[in-house]
Amino acid sequence: MTGNTAARPGNAWNAIEREREIDRMIRRICVVAWSITFAATACYALVVVLQAVQSYRLYRVRVLTGEAVWASVTPLILALGGLALLVAALSTVGVFLRFRTAALGEIQQRLEALEAMLSARNDAE
Image 1 (tube, rainbow, N blue to C red):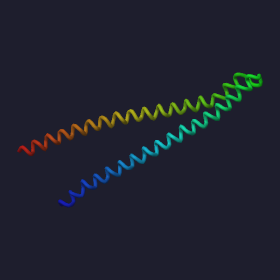
Image 2: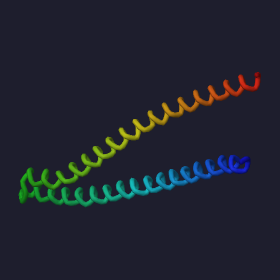
Image 3: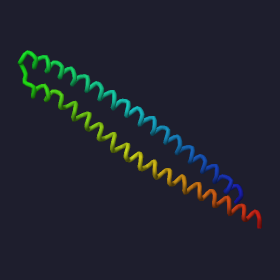
Image 4: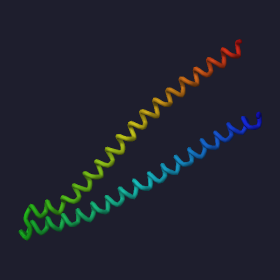
């Protein structure tokens, strides 16, 4: 029975280490995904800006109207707005999760203090 209880903490630490490794992998994937997202957005913005510049040149020589110039910029505005909405929603979720993690950390600290107090009381008896 002693060998069985000795194996439990090792298994717990192994499980904790596996979870930490999974967290690190998810963070790496997240950084790569956001980097690709912003790079793709920058490329899209470049394409739309080049089209808008061409539309503006045609507007200056009276080939296009001002509405056509605005129409060439509208997709970029919508894409950037959608991306900003996505980042805002995800960061809000992150803030709520961070608050919850902080609250759980505080609960854990209180439980550790209670455990230390109880073990000190048991040692005194």
